[in-house]
Image (cartoon, rainbow, N blue to C red; front, top):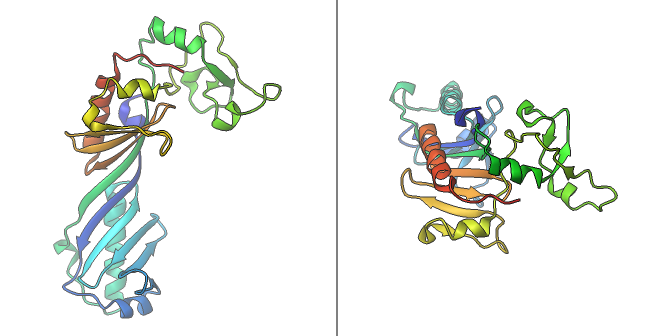
Length: 248
């Protein structure tokens, strides 16, 4: 499975401007939008499909959040402009509206490489797993990593068991020793305070993104403006971690 297939974009935030000025009280009434000026200076316009929230401000600016891709954002902005015009509220022509992505948030799981070397096999055979024939990833051989709740169970009820010799876990995330990573990654770009937050915060200069790395091998990447930047960051992180020891 490629990096792009394992990458899941969970939120796209974009900004635009649709008019010289917007009459927010009128918009709230005409479009039945949320408007609480004592708490927040903007109108909240919601789109159900795709599921988005667009914040409109008196200056004519709008911020769209909740999209899974750029097409979602364009669809939501177009629908908003059409609704505003249908209510006789003046906006710019759609062709004159420029939409700029400000932030993309994505999740990604570090998996074992396809060659699945001897060290990886040895780590797997010492790892406790759960038998789950219905697990969606067929590459995992029907085994999956345990949930925190399963790890915390009493021994008598625990479904954890050793992985049988020869069973690959190429579809499961790595188990990372985050304390170990702090000594191998550039100290001026890493923050790890497990008492305050369970993930390691790694700031990358180029592409300029922030990566949250968790012990399960899951990552959250934020700060990118294009999907290509996220994929580039993933390749960079994988190169950084390639020679480090992964522990369960």
